[in-house]
Length: 513
Ligand SMILES: Cc1cc2nc3c(=O)[nH]c(=O)nc-3n(C[C@H](O)[C@H](O)[C@H](O)COP(=O)(O)OP(=O)(O)OC[C@H]3O[C@@H](n4cnc5c(N)ncnc54)[C@H](O)[C@@H]3O)c2cc1C
Image (cartoon, rainbow, N blue to C red; front, top):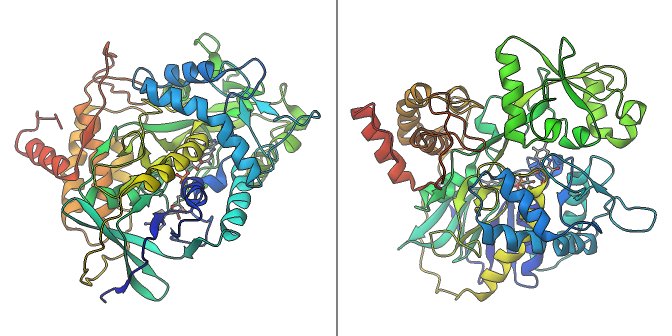
């Protein structure tokens, strides 16, 4: 069926209604925007599930410089210092703005923000809400604020299937809504579509987060960056549920320790111990489990009977699995959690396609480097949502061209991609397994009706991971364990990924993207 064409004069189309999409929309007010949410607003959004909170230097003994230093250290040499500095300075004001939008963060008796400590932060600087319900509170407040803003139209159950591009410029966004295909003519679109966890067999993300926005940008010709940097959260609950329930870093921040089934506190001799950066802890747990051990998070002594009130969401997940964290250690294992790479954007959130911006987890801003610092993601989305809005305000308006209707691609199904990507691009990688994934992914990306877009994103991850023949941050190669003195960033278009895949098919030793 061909699409109905809508001409929303001057309207910006935002793909995604998590913290990034809604903040951009609110910051653009009173400029008219259409916010697309492929499900009911809030559903299928990682923001809703965020537990720990938002990082910002708000404490009396803290500073943006210290927040920036911790971000740089976790990023393992691949953060962009100027981006980090700008972010750390802007984060406190972004939190204050969210509070003005109505977010009720936990407060001290004196009325200041109650600040938690998380892994690899040198100061308590995590603003939280209802204990471990930061995301739920944030979405409640942002949805209410957006619904109360006349310039924002939230279109629920509208899924973006293609960005229409001519001469490397955005011309429209092709969607499928409840009544069928609709093509929004616009010269300005923002991708705020969240993460990629749904491309993996085990992830903490909603199943619907499978990198659709990355595929939209890649098919539109945009460059993507640092695709190989995938963060695995060390402590997902080790139960059969999918997605894997998360046991936030904040639990370790309050003193819970990691042990194996013999009671050995195996992080004792690692610098930073339980609060080392995520990649370090995830690898330590992966190695224990590879030796046939089970790993547990023991919160009995540090939190004990306070667990239920301090971490009500995690407590409920434990109870659903028949566990009582006040009385027994919680079984945990690493699970895909976050994507540091994404749509490559310049300082103001602009991609390599004119009229296409990106923010939130879908964007590669160069903030996180090779490993995201805990609780920097929600803050990044809030800060860069505002930056993108200002950039759009300053961008010229281009005359909308005549568009011809064309059929929408079918809905995507990532299920065949999951086992291939999970085997190749897990906590530990090696050249042979990565190389073996490239042929099947390239073939799916070229010709599968329903798996083409998920496979295209997975192909870009695997090609970039194969080309990175060293270990740095979250990217750990068993065959190349050395860390280079000066790691480089990676960047590629989908055509370049296909070309690299073809080169590898004809010469299995070729790997450079
Ligand atoms: C369990 C869990 C706990 C976390 N805890 C924290 C934390 O404490 N602190 C922190 O900083 N970060 C945390 N994170 C990470 C953080 O939540 C995410 O990185 C962040 O919320 C991403 O926000 P976003 O707006 O970019 O994407 P999302 O919130 O995922 O929103 C994406 C939106 O895009 C929509 N969408 C996707 N594709 C399409 C399409 N094709 N058409 C239309 N709509 C589409 C989705 O439906 C959704 O509305 C956590 C993540 C998880 C999963």
